[in-house]
Length: 296
Image: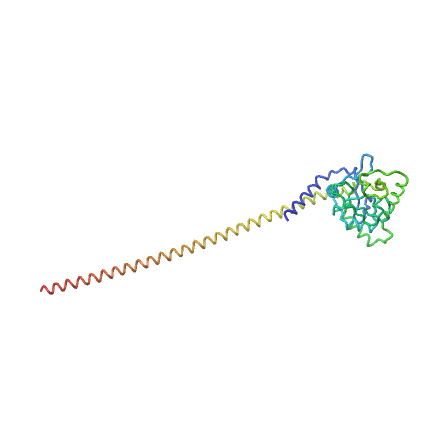
């Protein structure tokens, strides 16, 4: 439990230290207030305002925390996929896997596969990140109860954008494309409709409060452990003291008993000595009387 508190403290310390992240250099898909089941993808932008793979597995988790949300799990991205989320860039998830959600097959996206395409790659490899906003997911779930299926957002336009982009121009080359794309040596850029990520920065203010809450909770827990240990130590000392006092009392009783026994033996010996002296005196008195009578 102490180890868990230490890990939480480290995590939220990183949140506080990363709250000043420059959101103008990151971009999210879908755009503002359009996450799918709470899931959105974060990409880093270069000097030409083009997305580039920039986050390893550790950076990915810290980035989501700095935005006031958590890194998405495989199940959460899978749920977003079933609701229409589709991208063409690999991103890290909580299980240290790189995934890309695909609704339609496209040669330059996810090796022409559909579904949640996984890529087991070294955790130092730089990719994008899938983050999860729990409040967005709860809101969309609530809206889904009242909205009709026709109201759901269609993200298939991103695939059409990638197709037309691949046909009309040569996409930007990336170091990871040779191992993840089957028919192209380049990685397409993110949808132009994706917007910068300042909107998730609004939850940064709650990160500090969460850090303080977790820190306070762990501090109180450690204090409670210290108090319990102190009470246990005092009880242990009290028990030891009681045992010692009991032993001293037993020794005192034994010593008193021995002393009384010795005194009783001494008194008996004294009585016996006095009785012997009395008998001797009587014998001598008898002899004296006998002598006097004979002399007469």
